[in-house]
Image 1: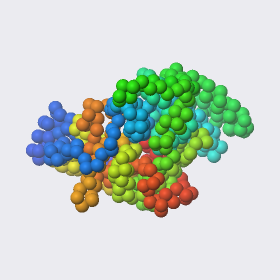
Image 2: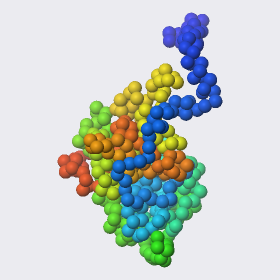
Image 3: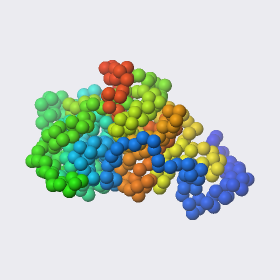
Image 4: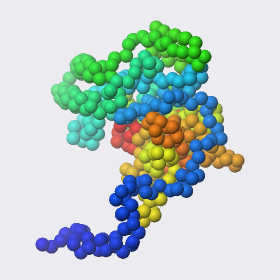
Length: 456
């Protein structure tokens, strides 16, 4: 039998084997990895020695307790609530406090299912084939846990906030995959119904009535899994001086508008991204097709700026005593146990004879699928040297207190440039010419663009 060109013939395999054993270091590395995680074996001791969780500028109040999203993709919700609680705790003289992540999670699931069903109608009317890339992409994961900044704003402006004591987590909040699996099956089933109706030229009224019927079932599933929030809440608590306090009865929206918004108004913040791909110029406004969570809500907008500007504004926000919500590719060059994100954290060259992840530029990693936004966290401190150069950030995560320094991470400025993709900054700190970009008509990126992966 004649071997095909490019086939791994016995001669080629013999050559690969010989090349492997020619270098004794490969045998040593093989022995090490027989018992040790290869990433652990690559950790640079020098980086561990110089990485100290000490910073020149730190926000006055860091939230307690350290939060834990567990086996769910709620990082975007946890991180913004971690940011907001710092000012809330200060104003209400609290030692510990959490907003209810489950409350926003409930409303995101309900709103997002409704948004998805309307997207199915919209794409059907655009004559997008069900086997085409767009509809296939939408059907692949109709109701994931992730989300983006503008989606948070939609939820808070429409549904408000509540303390965690008033709407605690259920099992499906902490372990969401089973609930999501049920919802995905129903949404795909309902997608066929809606697409069939569109093909038969159903009216807008008929389609809306059908979606409402479908949402009755969807709401039931979500309510059973997560609980249904009450229309009003009463929050009783002790402040730091052990004085009894009570707020309510009050609606969640009133709670936000009266007790949170005066100190942290989500409408005063803007989302800046840094996307260096040649096709996406800095100083331009972008959006993503079919990305959102609330019908009639604000669209997901990205103001693309250089990483140096994002880093500078993040530092200024911290110096202004406000933490920063940001999105990144968290697992790249992360030493989890010590909580270090440093592009020099792993010495892959010594173990494998080749480097990993940094041989491509940031733009190339986006283009070739090696990097994307997958996690949101919050900056709470920064170090700036005597020459004014930003050196590192302190990061509040939502993975519990067992990793890093009691749940906090250290992130270097070099890592920021390579793997941070967006940050949310108060308008008052953003230059006027950057704010003017939001006046542009946004350029629409495809639904599967890597700038949207935090919401998938």
